[in-house]
Length: 205
Image 1: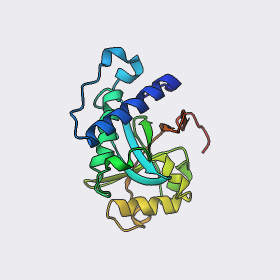
Image 2 (image 1 turned 60 degrees about the vertical axis):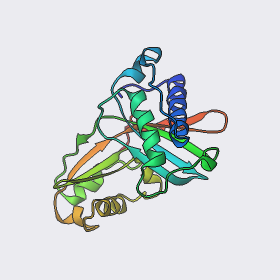
Image 3 (image 1 turned 180 degrees about the vertical axis):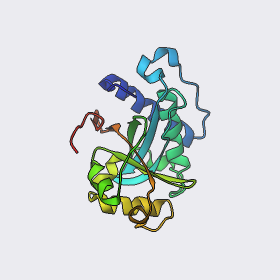
Image 4 (image 1 turned 135 degrees about the horizontal axis):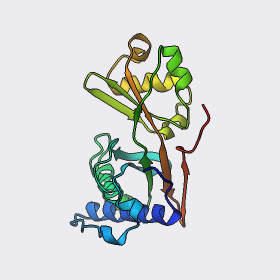
């Protein structure tokens, strides 16, 4: 995604995600989405993560870092995967549906962050703005920008991200890992409307 989504487009994505999740949990076949009926932005290739919460506690989160299918299809696919296939949780069941809140994050394309040292890396990360990907050999892990809310210190953020790729927590200090950053446009369900924010427009460092 290169442009901000409209309120209507966000509502459509949340509706598609909700319908896909409820269909999958009910054991029904997911009908194909009519792409021709959707706005152009939702037909373009896009990468997304879908996060499920209950009472602000994580219930599932799955997505992709690369665009490979229309954004509307991507959101539907990951809504189903977050509900049924997140290995950290049991599948969501019907009794939870009314308590689940959906959050969609639409990602910009990741780009390599050039840095000279671990100290330089800390100065180049932008808390609450950048999503971060760490790569070491064939291992890769990411934290969305929303994770900064729980881990606001950049060093702690990198420690936890190293642990996510099963590396020593201080690996980013000892060796030069590949670091990629991206931004997201994030929005979520409320009872009567949606709320959200766009981190890709922030310029602060």
